[in-house]
Amino acid sequence: MHKKCRDCQLVNFSGAVKCSRCGSVLELIPDRSAIVEDPGNTFRRRASVCVLVCIVLLAGFYLSLIGSARSLSWEQEQTVRNAIAVLRDKGFSDEVLLLDNFAVFRGTDNWLNASVAKENAYAATNFPFEIITLYPDYFTYPVDDTERAAILLHEAKHLAGKDEHDAYEFVWKHRKQLGWTADKYGGSPVWQNIRQQTRDNVPLLFVCNANNFGDCTQ
Image (cartoon, rainbow, N blue to C red; front, side):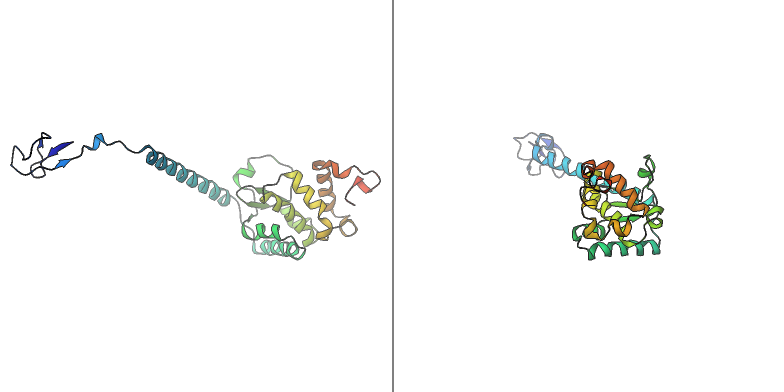
């Protein structure tokens, strides 16, 4: 603590009552350098700064993914809406909620997808950023909206954080609920492709030799 004259700015001894230079009455002024800051406040302030920086970085990363990929055309958006409508009609409400309210659809790879080597695919999902990339094959090879709905059902599981095993298993076990069955779609390249990929990822579903293709879910 010290006494600094507010009029002439002279620093006086702590016991002085009046300024030795101008005679003004002195007041006791705390020395800022001697004040000890609460460690809790320091931690909270630093934590807040770190959280803010992380949010800014994540937002920038997300926007870079969105901006580096082409959006869908109007016709493609309508095709996607029709496929989602099929899922809604068939009772997949949880998956429709994710697709309708959280998914952002793009028509080409963003820079992250483009940097990863991959096989030909109908779609890809960036979790947890909820970005679904729909490749040209998605609009070309499915015979109707039901087959496109099956592909979106797979991607919806990725939106929820599920891996390939769980996504393939869910779609294959719920194909009858979707109306995507062998008697209607068995000759479709999408059916044959997804059935093979499901067998590769969930082999335990295909160990029943008495059934066609060893499919235990028949």
